[in-house]
Length: 207
Image 1 (cartoon, helix red, strand yellow):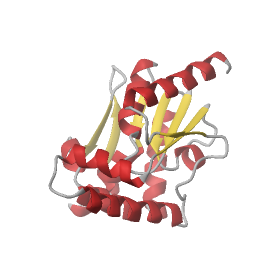
Image 2: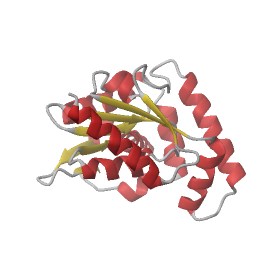
Image 3: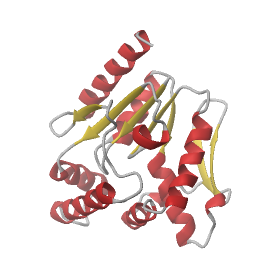
Image 4: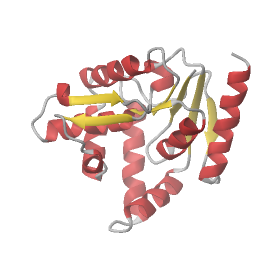
C-alpha cells in the first residue's frame, strides 16, 4: 500500500505520519527532510549526489550527506527557508522525486510532503491533505522552537512560505483531486492519527 500525506509547513505531517506509518508497518519517508538535505548540501558546498536515503533491515530510513548523519542540523529555520526556495527549481525537485520513487518501488510506504499525491506518487492507494490555520501552525512551531521569536513573527514567515509554495510554477502546493482533506486546526495529534488510521484501515479492507 502507498499512502501520501501532503500539506503546508507546520501542519504536523511528520509527527502524525511517522506514528501512523509505525502502526501499519509502512516505510516512512519525509520529502521535506530530503529538500532540507539538498539545502544543507548547497550551503556547505556539496553536490546533490552527496544526499543519500537508505533503508536498514528494520525498515527504518536513514538520511546522510556525504556519509554523515546530519539530521539535527537540518531543523533550523535558515535551512527550512533555503529548502523552500530550492524546491522551486525543477532539477532539485526531480532529484528528490527520483529518490522517493526509487525507495517506494514495490514497498508499503507512507510518504509526506507537499506534492506527493499530485506529482510524485499520483497512483497512491490513499491520499491525504492536512491543513490548519497559519496562526495555529505558528503556535505549534513556537512551542517546538522553545521561544526566541514571537508567534506573530513565525506566523508571518509561514504565510509567506505558503504563498510561495502555492504560487510556484512547478508542482504548486494543492490537494490531489482524490485526496481526503483533514483540517487539524482544532484537533489533537491523536485525533489526526486516529482519522488517518481509520482511512488506512478502510482502504486496506477495500483494495
